[in-house]
Amino acid sequence: MNICMIGTGYVGLVTGVCFAEIGNSVWCVDVDEQKINSLKSAILPIYEPGLKDIVEKNIKEDRLRFTTNIKIGLENARVCFITVGTPSSEDGSADLSYVLAVARAIGQSMNHYLVVVTKSTVPVGTAEKVRNIIKQELKIRGRDGLMFDVVANPEFLKEGVAVDDFMCPDRIVIGTDNERTAELMKQLYQPFVRSQNSILMMDIHSAEITKYAANAMLATRISFMNEIAQLCDKVGADIDSIRLGIGDDQRIGRHFLYAGAGYGGSCFPKDVKELISTGHKNNLEMAIATAVDIVNERQKYYLVDMIKKRFGEDLSGKRFGIWGLAFKAQTDDVREAPALVIVQSLINMGADITVYDPEAMDQAKKVFADDYDIHYADNMMEALNEIDALLLITDWQQFRQPDFAEMKKRMYQHIIFDGRNQYDPVHMKNLGFEYYCIGRNCYVK
Image (cartoon, rainbow, N blue to C red; front, side):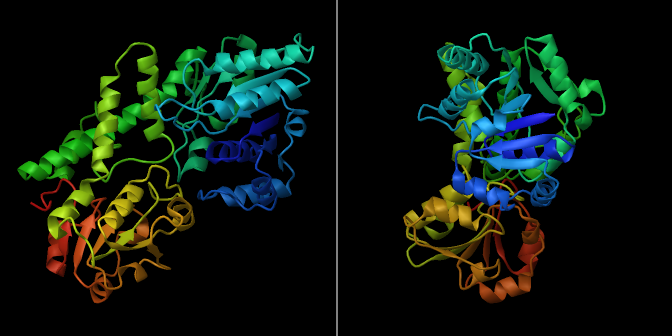
């Protein structure tokens, strides 16, 4: 099948590449000429395990192509995916300007029947807006008789395992009001599913809300466990024991029950905020989603509060090493990452900061720019040289069993603030470290 993918970020690039991998002919379109030129040479704008190899393979086999010209992308396409960003506006609502601009460009360029798919995470009612804009543009061209359908097909890709998620999905959600289009979408996705039960057909509005509901539910689990972890630190309980105690309940399960420094990334923060905004627009207070958002913002400062209690609020002359900048391991994405809040807070209190992340250093440099004086280490051990304390913020595997003896040689004070509960408190004490973590009765009193 001929496919056009408009937008080459995480969703668009992974989706386009995976469709090409199973034999489809895919054009990926983006307005960023530099990005497109890089992609033609298999130079990726993101880090995602396994993706580069598949890109190189499908470029070589001429199933995957890149262009800035939407007319070229649409020329033979049967299905066109909209996969551009929907960042949060100041009021928390999703900014649909990129999505609607693409819809306008499609209406100005299409010349045959087309299935237009909103793959970006978009609020309820977006498919109707996309349909109306395309109709308007076709009418302006005198092509208002040209037929097309609009489908809502939200993505459920986890950064760090996005390729595996696409190739072996838990489920595929398709929202459409047209039986013919439903069959076409089933045909497109059939190679990725083991049974028809994995393809969930529903109305467009339900499909649009499903993505927000899923992310808000997962964010709720994280914020709930983080709040329980803070209670554990107050009363002397252990969040890890509690996690096991509730995770074996089949009604709850073990996933997304780890306490930490708060969630981040491109999805959970903005999707929770958009759900709250959608509720307000419909005169409904989304009380749970609002609480989730508040708890998560508070959690990002939890390590900072520990440091204040240990060192005081004036950190002038103190040096801290940071392990981990990405919002999660196996990605270079620092959007809404807790590390950004923590680093900025410590610098504002006068601290000297050295950071290290296996993949996210370049992205962090773009965010911090020249606004903050930050030292970037070449490796994880270099970030420890003569520091007063280490903050572990992202749970990269290489941080899990480091050379503790080498760490002690490099650190001025042997103090660790563990924002991911990677180490055993008793073991760290025996090694001679002053160790603080989250919800495990080692909070600075």
